[in-house]
Length: 550
Image (cartoon, rainbow, N blue to C red; front, side, top):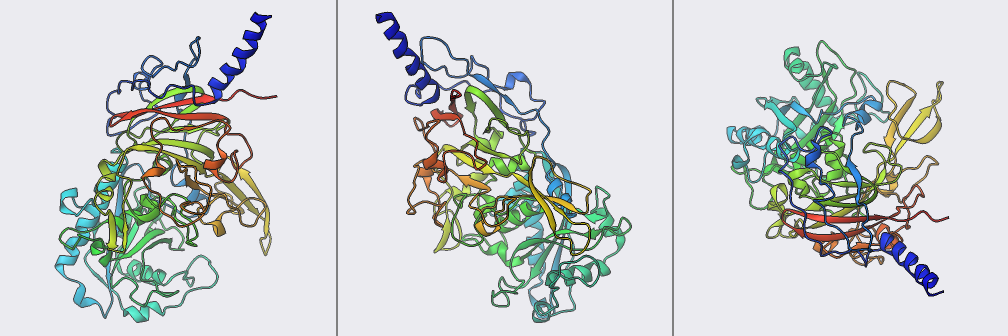
């Protein structure tokens, strides 16, 4: 009887060790760092010797028997191109790999010609194509070369000043179409008139030079307006801000038309504290160029929440891109977990290491999953994490995380495919979750359903949803409104980062996910995560798969 009683006690304890956290040793010694990643970053061709082996990983003292902790691999499935989603809606984006070219046009209005100096033109060139040391931080080109682990090289040119026929006030009053159609006569934005003016003035040879893929569209088109930010007062309809949009003209192989484009004031180059035209500020231009690659904003357009914590290049224009963004741009591949795993993560900004957790993952970036990366205030994260950080005034400054720590994200970038009726008025006939992006069907298109703006977040059934595209999970597990950036516009602080010894149990996700203890699709997360030892070289992530119940 004693022997039977002992077995009854041991089995539940072992199960707790597998799904819980308290029995996992967080003091395991750090695994030896593998060789530094080359400038090309991780890829499906990474030699197996670069993937940490079970001997290199820390071992847990969870039970008297050894637990296999190598149930993960570097993703081998093919990810979508960063351009595919834009192609589904008959638009385009700049290719995020290889050597790409951007055409930059500085635009002068009849009442701003006195600002069009040689100094300003030199500054614009530094902002886009200068060396790091020629700027106050990075140029657009130097930033993206570093952020992509050398997988992207941006080249191009800043044209001489283009003198428009309009004054700033005449430009702001130009006709804007209520219906968004294609072709001549449709102007969705005042800037469309300006693009048309530029297009009709410059020779075909110039546009052909910037259509490297031969699709009849200029690969990336930038306009820098020589006028103040919010020049017309900043009210609705004032085009003098910074944004990315599309010009709605059909492709033309003989004279490629601009399609995806960005627009911003020259004064953004001196908007940051400590920056000026001699040491210009490229933060805003880097952010908008991120949109040219197809990346969305991660802030809440309604200003009600801050799902991503407000500390990211596509959130509040600071620091490096997070690993979800880099995965969308195909600059790195994840470690994919399928069971118990001890994984040594090196700093994400320099190596591209990150983890995806989701049983039944569909094999590419457009799915729902937990994403884990190791943040360090180094490289592109460094400058904006120091002192008071980055900002345009003493009252408008944001500092990035200035300590090492693990960032855990809840990603929900599931796709919805819409199909329209084939006869007028072309109503939506169906909307369904999809693992594939529809291309080449004029009556169907695919978009990401969730958004960090609630009023833009969609589900196939229609109506608003609270599903967020990219949610930075708070290590504190805050559930009240106070201090919770998923419920208020609060900015995340250092306490948001997970530190050694911190654990999320397999059954304890609700206070971190906030809405439920499952994924938005209703499936259980089914894993516990504990943060092991960390230093500047990396951190041990201890992952245990919960046993299937029932």
